[in-house]
Image 1 (cartoon, rainbow, N blue to C red):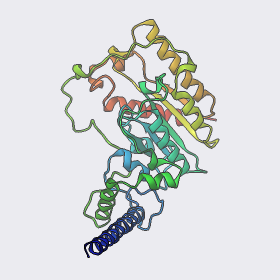
Image 2 (cartoon, rainbow, N blue to C red):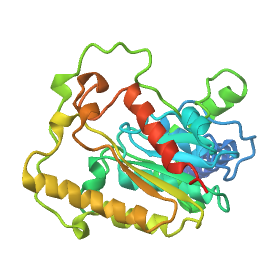
Image 3 (cartoon, rainbow, N blue to C red):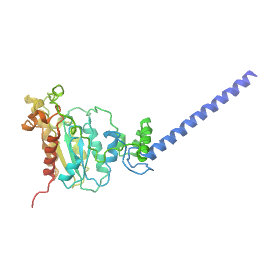
Image 4 (cartoon, rainbow, N blue to C red):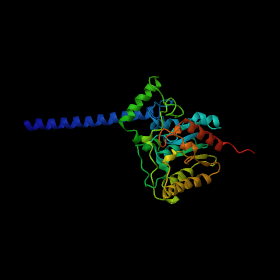
Length: 328
């Protein structure tokens, strides 16, 4: 009798476990379908809800939406050392329609991933791409380090990579926020991606504690740098009319290389990018990484690498001049 009862109990437990596993799989599939259908990051993949932008998730997650917006044909890529460039001003100064896709704390690999996303969603258009080149673009490390986590799956060309990347709890939270935004209960991200860290903040002097000298590296040749080949590979996929502006972003003059070896290292790095710009008609490199009156003025900087609005306005004007058609 006892063995019969034990056998019955065992069968009941097996049925319960099977039902639990089945319910778990069904729930997971329902949640996965819900997240993909809501398309919280507005990628246009698997979406059933209308595309109306995204909540303010932060640049890493919001730029998938902004980068595929119709009606834009120009973008700024980089990190916080280029993010003060105002896309609205750049649009007024040029014949282009700019957005800012600059992600603080990002490096060449992340920035090229976003740029390629932008390229893929604006095929056949005459594009203008502005890259802010800071010290991370002069690395000789292989692979180039990723300082902060980055959602490469979000910008991937593979729908499978995207779908797998979305299978996380944060995607459910993002989907709920997207629905709240559509209902008017959540603020949306800025339409042009601009994040101004200068306006409205009183300057109380250069942050001396944050002023760090550029690292003193040994001399390297053009072949030693690991970022230029990534940029050249990306450039090879661009349409013939696409223009590129490479901007060597300024640093506070006191932090520029002082030894011969470090200066040669920097010059070799610059030369690698000059060659990329020179090989493409209509493209140019603008070099602000120099010791001059602008970079020696304390009032132009918050710290070693973050300049203030007057410097950003100058860079914008130089970009506009570089993009202006040559007089006949």
